[in-house]
Length: 522
Image 1 (cartoon, rainbow, N blue to C red):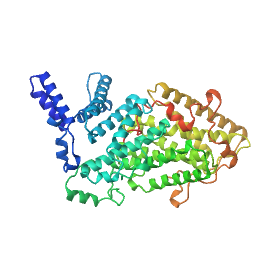
Image 2 (cartoon, helix red, strand yellow):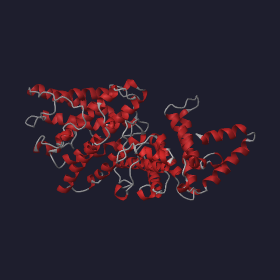
Image 3 (cartoon, rainbow, N blue to C red):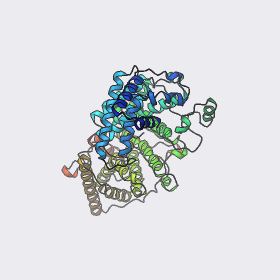
């Protein structure tokens, strides 16, 4: 990047190191305290010229620190020096850049918000998703993004195209992360869709976003649908952001319900939300909808992982909504079990592909704990309940033997995770022991009772099996007895129980630091 090249050139040409450092510091402080009129910037080059060379600003210096730290963490930087110490040094310098910038900036700038966002992404693996530092960083970033009026559509009319799209991307990313951390920490979101009318970023590549020629911009707009999706088969960061932001909009509404007394109106609204979530996914461009076949279609492994993780994000939201509905509506239980089975199958599919790419080994840990484990707990509970004499058996759409096989393989994958420490290690060991014990009891009960097994139902390759016909997922399931039993008491039998699995808030008991995955990546 030009800022780094300029610094290296000045350093290599200087013979007075101390004097050069003072000169660079003076230039940075002078430039940072100078306001920037972004409405007057009509070209990318003009905007960049105010951020490097003699105009290098604290925000850009902080970004350099962040890029260095994250490159080192993700093996893009190789050195014999102490990597961990380097990462923490860069993180500390980034924090100081933010602190000083806040103290001397005349107003919040886009580059400061970029720095704060990158710093948040670095804080996540160093301090954990649910740490107080991460929550504070998100609060500071949210405040500054709102100070830029990024939530107001009217504010974008006066910005150049490239900066407007950059700001839309930033707002979408922060909005998404805000809902994820609010869910993990059971706290109210800081940014509400109710007070925002800004549109999603256009589905353009980074190169296309940086176009500043009005004629070229008009051509780009002709390649988009009326709601901003590209008409071309395109995998890029803006597409993932649009997809995740759609999930976050529904998630924001769902966050309200656990803290409110139930009512028929609320139950009806939850049913609307689950349909809205499913319809949003089915409305995505076809190439952004996950199918297991994507891994063998020639698509790059990182893209396949994002397709999978995005699909699981939608399914996990279905899971969350059905969990709320199941407490008050027995008819939602079948849908909860079907979603859980689909999540388990999807996670296991990634587990069989871990050798295809190095990053999949770490990212699989995230998938199996964040998505797979809650679903496995629900399915294990259903199997054990159905094995109790004089209780309803599993519905015909679920194969008991297939569920047992899937959970057995799931336990094997859970036990194969390497390098676990602390709470994650204890959680995996206890969960593996609990699921295995449950399966043993289920098999023993079946042997004693001689129950017959229904024929397996072939797994659908489409998202939300059954919804393409227009029929809702919610259907009759176990009836009142199973519905009243619910899923709250997950194996309450001492060490054989899921005492960590109070599902509405189980994730807050997991240390997500240094784990792969997508909670904060976009």
